[in-house]
Image (cartoon, rainbow, N blue to C red):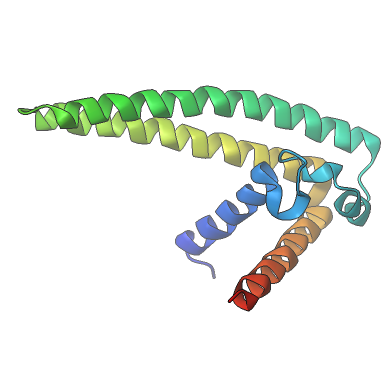
Length: 147
């Protein structure tokens, strides 16, 4: 049985691949499904690629909006912390506002991951995880080879 932390770390790693895409996709701007090798391995149809594009663009817009809110909350918290005399309760409340915005961002990333899972199905999602694991192993071995 996996611990919640281990599960969170695995999902976070996959989110980096799915959202960031650079580990798998080079310069595809987070759209690993446009990498011919990966799309071919997963046997993605044109309709699935279109659906992934639509889901990605919608999620990307929502994440930009939420990241802006995280930054606003961060600035507010910093301002409160820089005050010579500060109200600890107000600072804690602002910290909670910032954490709420961060949680919303994490949930949005996860919603996109769920959408990917729905679009590609169980078997190909597992295959995507395997591709990600292989890429991580390659990256790790390259990093170990560096002087």
